Length: 95
Image (cartoon, rainbow, N blue to C red):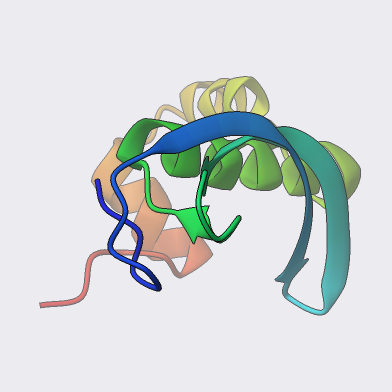
């Protein structure tokens, strides 16, 4: 992927301090990101960017939410399908 600022395709990876705001809660962590060797700007990298987003979600859920395992356990405890459970908690697919 090329740099959006200078169009260089020379990149390197280094640790980056993220600050995500998720539902009014600030989530801070460090993870690897790709940078332009020429101008030092962040460069899009699908794998690294997706990993960072998932890490932010995981941290938020650990601090403020409910784990995937606990959701499945609760759903199974009441013998509910995924579709019905999602409707009950208000996160059903929008058509």
